[in-house]
Length: 390
Image 1: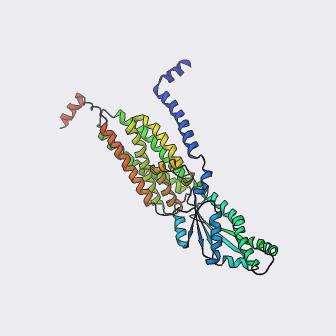
Image 2: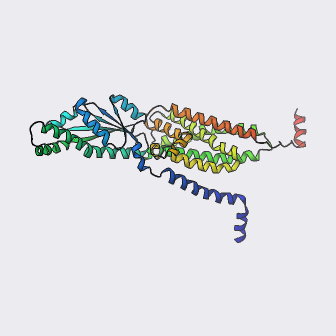
Image 3: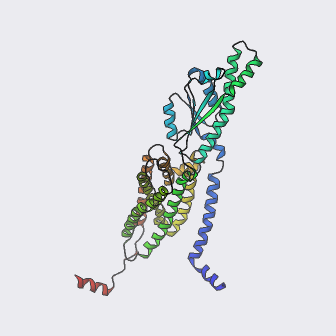
């Protein structure tokens, strides 16, 4: 047994395996602990739009809401513009004061409902934060705003201050929260699909790239470096179509959402997979098998910065800027649009194509700078055989 242990430890592959396991622990611990540090402290970076459809009567309330909301706020005159910004994820929630809201509160049996609209085509944390904020605003902030306005109104009608406060409090209890959602997500299993596809696609691309790199090294004596690069690019393109087809096919069979259709999802996922393949293999072209360490680093950063789990608005600026240059960010954006609804995935697809082309160009540059091994001469028997056939 002792001899076997010593024999294993003498093998470079054993040492590399142990180092790789340690590297995973180091990289993931550092990146995730720094990437998610202070996430809840940056909730104020989220954006909410306020629409006042109640004219002058709702102006005071809209201003009070703007001060009370713990997010970045913007007043919209046009409800359609606010809804478009919500659909484009420029806003995370829209608060609307409907027409006749204040007048309804002033009638004996009247009620008023503040309208909250949330775009579910976002990380799950967005829905949770916004629903909590809507409940809190309707029960506390809105209650105070309406009570203040009602108190002033009743005082002006020659009621005593104590009577006005009592009536105002009862009116404030009439305010309800009408919470609606756009681009609804059917279950937690669908919510996790973008992260699952990114994780599965990049890990698969990493492992595939490692094995193809080993194959390329073994064939270096038979084919030129440019031939091997061209074949690798071809294998990437064909494999991406097949791999993505298996993934989205299983997704559809298991009840996954695809608001914009199966074929569009397949096409976008194929682009995502091939981009991941080119990026993962780019590190191998640049650094050889040591490039796997950069792939581990890239995987961890992309899981944090892509917005698949935590909204990018809540991340430290460093990870936001790094994520802008990595493919997983655009993969998640496009997948959310296609799976759950939202704007078109054209911008995300274009950015993935740009990243893929850049990775191919860097890979080709690395190949050009590397000295190729001389090709093995054909054996004499093979030469004679070829001559006889000719």
